[in-house]
Image 1 (tube, rainbow, N blue to C red):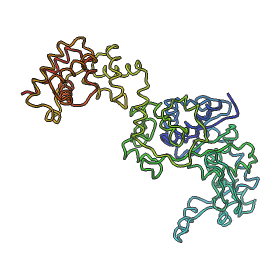
Image 2 (tube, one colour):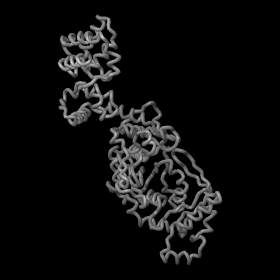
Image 3 (cartoon, helix red, strand yellow):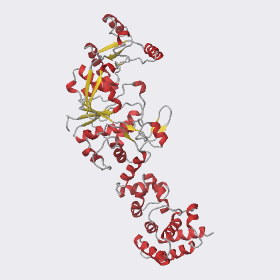
Image 4 (cartoon, helix red, strand yellow):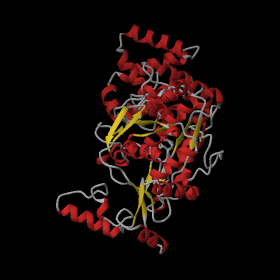
Length: 508
């Protein structure tokens, strides 16, 4: 494995993994596998106030379901651990203090109450309070105090944070592999907190330190982190790590089905589709959010769908296996614009991948459903049924709705179809058809088709009227698979029995 390419997926365990996060994991995984590098899972759990029990387990389970197996991580181990930031607490402080010593950061003793009061004062004037070069010298921090006072406050245990200090009027130039060169004026940036009063780093400090110490070569993450890039790049430079700074690639947003705004949980609730890979039960409220796995989606379909949200192979190909995605993936083919999520396209992907499942595997899944219904499952009959049902379903769980009539006689008949198809002359026609079928030998789809079409032509009947009426007798409605295939599967005896039952009940 190449040690030159090292990428990380670094989610926070603050709730269920959104499919946007899963796409980030996918793109990191594809890039690592394409170049023979390492795919690292790092749990960024420094914000303990937002930590949600079970969220880390959910992340691991979601990655396993999609076959995105990390090379290093909390479960896998590795030579760059620990892989939970909460277990690396002692590492971060020395880099925060180093930034203070170098004059790139400072201690701030402002209390949350003092800052809230300032925000309200600014709001009352129609302005927004920002902790930056314009305000920092009016506040309670080590820039406005004598060094002895700062040291005294720290020794007394006065709560403080460490903030990064941007010099105003500087041009910060950065390169992004998706967006090209990005230029930001430092005067527009606020002094972000790097180290909190509880002794934990913020995302910004931990992120930069860990990416260097874990030898991360490329940071592939969501577009929402692009505004943080000037801070991160400035920190690399301040710590004299510019030669170890990773390459950055910020992925476009996954948009609502309308194309307006970022896809959210609420969009899924309104549209009736999942936005999480797996079902999630909120440990506090008990609220359950659906997941793609539980809704019947195949992991292969989910991966295929996500890959094409923001990445374009440059061809008309839409269906990819994971192996094909690894072979074709490149950061250069990631777009800048947001990718609109289409729930119907998601179903289409699942339908297409379901068609690729080996017949034996699909037979086992269908047999499992039959056994739950108390119906026996014969291997040969199921093998014959798979090609008839597979094209008609998007999900495996739809099998029974599309196949029940192969195993049970209809107990009722669709009123609309009866009204349209059952006429005064219909019983006589169906009895003639029944007599033909009693003598049809062999009772195979091809031979049945030849005999039935010959009868229709001989008598000058309307093909649509006869076929739909026959279907009504066999399945109770006007829907279902090819009639001749259905008849062969049911067998002569069952076909005749259903026709006799239907004629009797509809002729009353």
